[in-house]
Length: 330
Image (tube, rainbow, N blue to C red; front, top):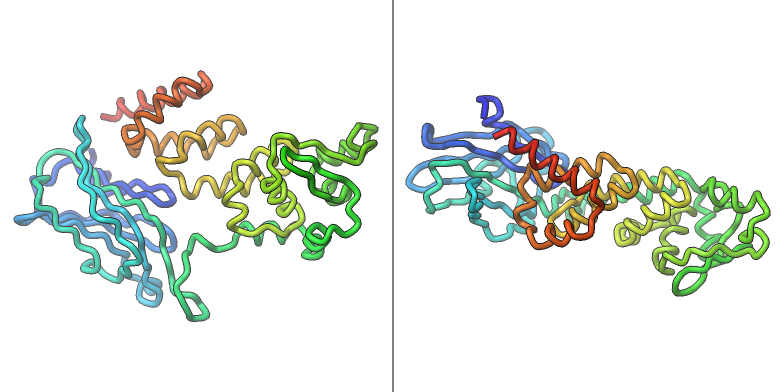
């Protein structure tokens, strides 16, 4: 590890890792600033009779006026072969203003050898501009705004109130009425269906048998500019599949951006496969980086073994190529 990299913290949108080769030669070390959410952060370690680990935001006007309220899990992980970990109890809604607001005293010897400080941010809140209760910075309704920008608000009423619907979408567990003109305007695939003498035009039906009625309703709500943030989050993978199938680029991009934001050990393998299937290189790179560079592949060994039994061979080869490249760095 070079001198400059000794202070660098690697991050994803919600995860920060600081790799420390050796603390034996000094009693104090502070990381370079790293950005999570709206704030720049620091980690620091101080060796005394015990090891003190601190997490705090960089002092700035933003921190003074609107300090973060953080929920997070912090671990110290041995980077040796056994990867032993010490985990602090989950911190919930802790306001952090300075370097004394979160201090973790560790009395287990960790002053020699390599170790990693791993911080997983579960939520970050800030005071609401209009006062009232703090709200999560990750709950901003960017998806709803994106959808509303591409469709008139009145289209939502046309769908929810079934105003002059002229085509029926048949799904695995029901059917929903919609409008040819709206579907054709939003999707070149639908446009082609209705422009040619295909069965969808003749029968005034579209069969989407691989979608549930709830997922299809979310799909139509997005097309009509009427989707809610929670509904979008629940059905992201189904919406990604539909966006790819019906060539709706802005929905595919919205799903891609959203799936990048909350990669964790429970969903990383599923998202890696989706990234490969739907040709999403940025999501694939982020999943591989999370698994390999951040060492999370060791935390999900059983799931990873199951993944190896069923995943595409080319994708498995990419994973192992990434692992081999990471070993070259040691």
